[in-house]
Length: 439
Ligand SMILES: Cc1cc2nc3c(=O)[nH]c(=O)nc-3n(C[C@H](O)[C@H](O)[C@H](O)COP(=O)(O)O)c2cc1C
Image (cartoon, rainbow, N blue to C red; front, top):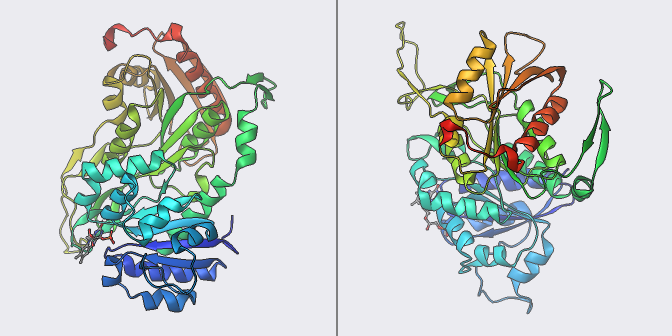
C-alpha cells in the first residue's frame, strides 16, 4: 500500500528524537500523504511547531483550548479527517496516558477520539523502555490493536548502548505502509474465516484445510537475533524469517489468532495476517515479548534462530583497530523455548525447531526432552538446498509420543502446513495428558 493521498495524523511527543519527526513529516509529504501534526507541550521543547507548520503548510494542533476560528472541536474534526494516526516518537509518558485512557492534552484527546489505525514508535532510554510499567503499557496498547514499531538498538542520546532508538524515518514509513496494507486486508480476513477448503499440494496429496485453530492463540518466534558487540557490530546467523512467516500464515489460515515475535528481518518477509507482530532485536527482548504473550497462548512454535550467546558487556563506542587481538567474553543467552516449555500450563503445546549439522535425530531428541517440547522439527542446515535463506525446507518432526514424520523437500509454506497439522493434533484433548517429565 502506498501513502499517496492518505491523510496521516502525526503525533509528536516530548522525547529527544522529536527532531526526527520533522524528517518523517517531510518524507510522508514526499510520498504524497496529506499530514496534520499534533504535538504535546513538552515536544515543543525539542522542536518548534513552526517547523511542522512549514512542512505541512497547516497549523499544528497543540492546545485543546486555544481560541478557534470555527466552532468545531478540533480533536473531533481532526479524528474524522485522518486515515491513520502515528505517534513518533512516543514517549513513555504518552504511552502510559494512551494505555490508561488519560486525555489531558491535544494528542491524547485526539487518540481517544480516533477510530482508525493507530501506530506508535516508542523511543526512550533502555531502562525506561524495559521498565515493567512501560512494557505493560505497550502490551495493553497492542492488545487494543495499536501497532507498535519497535525501537532500534544503538547508542542512545544518554550515551548508553541498548534498545530505545527511534527507527530511521524511512524504516517507519515502510512499516507504516505494511501496517496499513495489513489493516486493509478485509478480503483476506473473510477468506480466512470461511469454512473448509480443499487444497491439493504439488505431490497430489489433498488435504482439508479447516478452521481447526479457530479461537486458538498461537505465538510464533521467527528470524535471527542480533547481539551487539558495539554500536555497529553484532553476532547473528543467516535466518531470513521465511519459515516463521510461513508458519504464521499456515496457522492463521486454519483460524488461529497469531502473534509473531520476530527478530530483524526484511519487512517484505513479514506476513500480513497476524493479529500482532512484535519486532525485537536481541534474544533477551524476544524472551520478554514471548513471556508477555504466554498467559493468553494455547500454543508456541519456536522457529527463531536465536543466538545462543551474547557479549557480556557490549562496548559503548565502536571498537577501533589497535593491532592487537580483541577479546570479548560471551555469555549464554536465555533458552526461550526451554524457559516457556518448563513453565507451560496444562493444555499449552510447544513445538521447537532444531537446526543441526550432525547427529540430527539424537540431538533433536535431546532438545525435545530438555526443553519440554511436545514436538520438534529437525533439519540439516549443512544441506544448501534447504534451511536458512532458502525458500524450501525438509525435515523430520519428532513427537513426544515417539512418532516421527519425515517431510521431504518442499516450499516452506507446505512444510509449515505439515507442522501446523501436527499442532492441530497436539491440541486435541487426548494429546494433552502431561508426560512424566512435565509433572
Ligand atoms: C533532554 C530530555 C530528553 C528526553 N528524552 C526522552 C525520550 O527520548 N523518551 C521519553 O520517553 N522521555 C524523554 N524525556 C522525558 C519526557 O520529556 C517527559 O517524560 C515528558 O513528561 C514527556 O512529555 P509528553 O509525553 O507530554 O511529551 C526527556 C526529557 C528530557 C529533559
